Image (tube, rainbow, N blue to C red; front, side, top):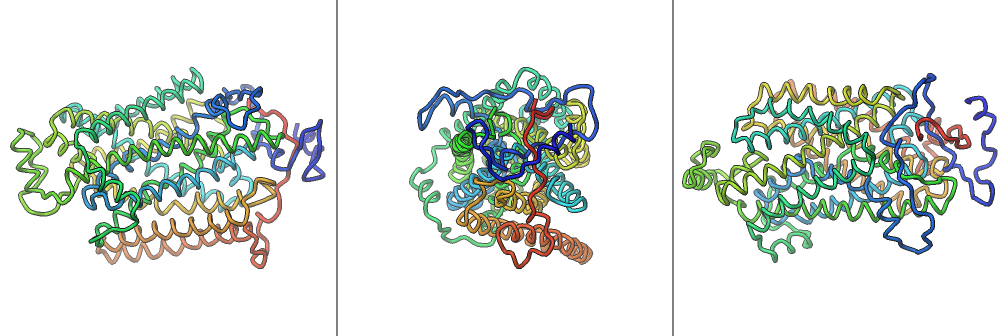
Length: 554
């Protein structure tokens, strides 16, 4: 087969074949398995969704429905427990004043997800597979390790979120480590649903998003936030009276919303639709509908995030520990000892958030909050499993059985989480959450730089490569986002107050910046800075073959 493919090398970037335009972008096929396999290789894509082809309208709801799914799975990363905790802390520390940051971060996230979706649609390969082809071995392995660290960090937050929800729902009877063990069962749920078809799996994720919307929407209705202050905070880009605490929280919002592994995930999920990539019009149409679907999905996730921010902004902004203690005592809550008898400003996390809601608005508010957190954690751990599979398969070109892949990716994330749960109690996890946010912030360049690089290369994207406006604006956005997240990292490290940790951080920072500089060099070459092109692989198009059906796409 390989010899036949090599004999079919494209001689031109664009040719006419049976009246259909065939371009270089339509000819990139996924890498073949390095060894022959007796059984077909099965993935998320083995059940591809057909797209209606008898609709000639400019816009069709039938086609939009056919493309609906990947964007909503992608949007779950914007609703994971890490994001929910960032939302409630934003409301408690800054009121409604940082809602415009949340809105801006969501819009930036949408633009970055657009690039990820276009890469998957145009090339038929997800970002990890393209990285596997474009980068040399050492950078490729380093990139995989960095992304894997981001996935582990995110998954730890998600699993811990599930465990906290189970602890709240069981009134403390299920310890943190027990909740983590229970969460392991989502692996089998994942496998079970996957066998019943792609659309049923997507419907299940839609159900979990609905549970989150209803749960946090209930809290929103109960608290009745000031709508004028809410709109002002959302559309007036100013933070009156804000200091370092609010600034750090603003940076934390950006870091929580824009997650590196989600770029890899979305570029893979869009491959689940049956699109003829040799037909330029079909590719263009798919890009349009995926962008519409992603916009709707992220709008819904934004509303859910706003619900959480508004609840804590209205009810708990500028509240003190002694006020919380008094209120919890008055309602007979067993958790009043969480709040010391002092006038320090209240600090909340996912666990304390549920407790204070219960103290102020009754047990129903606490349990409904816990249900929402459980839905957020359960859905995001399952999409995190997909991310782990795609990243590992793409970077390492693994072709294992489905059970082995899921077992490995879940074990990598569950093991450190279980250790944390055993040696840490549910009331003291805020420090770990801050560390995990910093960890993910540091990995952000390893998704954003490659996605801008490859979507700007005409040798990969051809007619769908980024134009000059997208190249410049994308570069500026990525620079700003990475700078914001690096500030977050610096603030965290300087608060450690340890000379040894400072020295270790400095050494790691040098290696880290060298690798980021290497990726930036590749990116600048792809953006057209020819004076830097002294041997970059990305300036040369990869070997391109006429696309044939492969076991990966079956």
